[in-house]
Length: 195
Length: 360
Image (tube, rainbow over all chains, first blue to last red; front, side):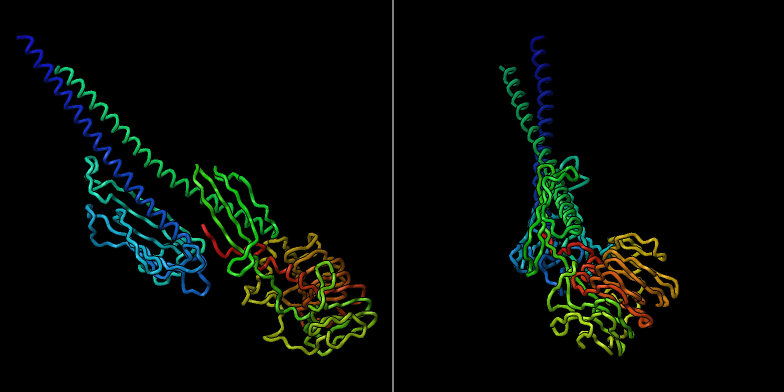
């Protein structure tokens, strides 16, 4: 009789231990998934932002004096500028525009960034949920006008980008914060050729 | 058998958990590495830009400097800067390439710049520009032919020996006047060629009677008081004094003497270079019996009894310029485009490189 009791008790205890281990494993797996999504989201965003920064820094390069302005359009979510971006001796026209329309991404909060290079459009789908461009004049005063009508005043700009993964992922410890693991990137850029 | 199975399951779960934890840590490491690399890249770019700016500053001191920097430690990173002569958009330029490394991240910044052309004030109409009659005697030589800053002749690129709004300029004693007219040099002579002394001239817009108007006026940035302000700033060795005894030699930059009404800087020593201004609000100060060697531009209300050597040009600002003879002793006054443009060089964008494009 006591032998049967021992077996039952050991089965119960081992069952509890097993459940604990499985739960622990599940938590770790969830975190692993979240981390992986975070890495992908962060890498996507930094790659896109690196590309934007690379081109924004070159605005005005080889643009002859006499142009009305190197920046032809500027508002809080779109900028169009000139510069020999590809270093081939001819001035290019580049536009970066945040498209707020709904995408086919599983995470419906994410939107597209549209890059237009000499009329040829490319879609950048890296899970951007918000993009804001802030403009400053020569003494660092923010230009609050939107869109900026006198783009010649612009001497520097701040780029702020929020990103999430394009696939929905609700992390148990972030459900009140973000639908998916999020990344924020901000950079103030002073293009050297913006005279 | 049951216990063995449980052990196998538990060990299996622990192995799976271990691998998963390892992956979590690896992902965390990649996130941190990504941020770190991004930050390091930005710092590297800042270091590279600092390298370019240091080279620009050095070029302000020495335009021919092309040595660059090798493994220069900056902001806990390392920058290497090289300079080379090149052509950029048809302009002869100095190229500066700065490559920086910070925390294994590298960045390169390139700048192309040129030195702006030197500038000669339009008020320089001749070796000596006057608003009144005057005369010379003794052994003074006025040579309007062009010279380098050492006084060596540069053929056929000079100007009048004398340019005046008045109807007369008298040459007597053993004095000589020469110059260049329509690209032809005329050797200084006691009986000078008529063409090297320009009489009855008209200065378009009115004769400049202040240093700032003589330097080009507001249209080129010389609003009234600008020259005095530059002199007071001390830039390029500039000086502003009301007492000539306080001058430091050799003169350089803008040397501005503001004397009391009617006062004269007598037995003046003007050894040095740059722009020498002797002026007051009444336009009746004098520079008299000067001696030494000066290379550059002299702007003075009235000039009496030049001695010594001047290489450059002289402009008289005062209406009473004919009150005394400009020269009556042993003096050699040589026109020099090089000395003039050297003297004004630091007024135009300083001595610094004008950067026209960056690539980074």
